[in-house]
Image (cartoon, rainbow, N blue to C red; front, side, top):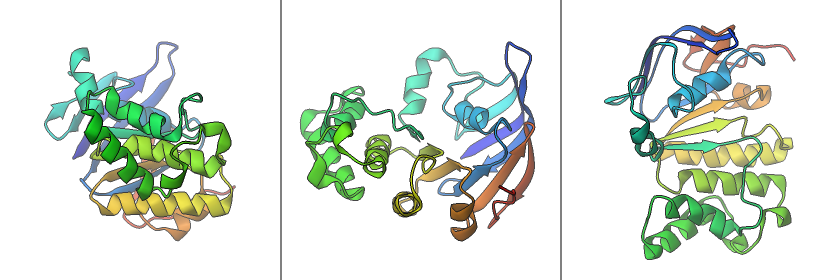
Amino acid sequence: MIEMQGVYKTYPNGVTALNGLDVRIQQGEFVYVVGPSGAGKSTFTKLIFREEKPSKGSIHINDLDLAAMKERRIPKLRRNIGVVYQDFRLLPRLTVYENVAFALEVIEQRPAEIKTRVMDVLEQVRLKNKARFIPDELSGGEQQRVSIARAIANRPRILIADEPTGNLDPETSWEIMHILEEINQTGTTILMATHNREVVNRVRKRVIAIEDGVIVRDERRGDYGYED
């Protein structure tokens, strides 16, 4: 599903973020991406949805060559990739319903289909009863669940979660993890960049550890592996 071969990424300031990555992730896997701050985790995930291009090497998602992809094809790629951020990135003046619906409006879904799908995903993240609320009326965990609902509204095949529990208390973090596991069980590939040791150690999944732009560990049921 996702394959990187000999991937390097050097930024204009001369910083090399990735230094020869080789990795293959199959459809339906749940993968934690761990490592120290500045190790290259964010660059790794940004390459997958073409926010960044590799300086060298190849990246394929199924039959799509991301390194050679023309700019006009990027929106089509991103329809199959959902992204959840640590800071939620919700539109503050829109309701929960409108925030999720917006993701479908931009790809010109029909209004009737939008209404049905929005209510379905809000039920999936346990927020159907708060469809008319605005983000400021929600807790942090609820805002993150809206972010997840928005990310999966278009039924993406890949979900990238960038520190989805980073701003949340432990109990709320587990609520988010249960939802992510349910999404994964439907066949969606999940890549989760995280510093949450407890989650990684308790919910054992594949762990890819990146240090100084290099994959130093790739374990099927790995642990976090770093000291606080």
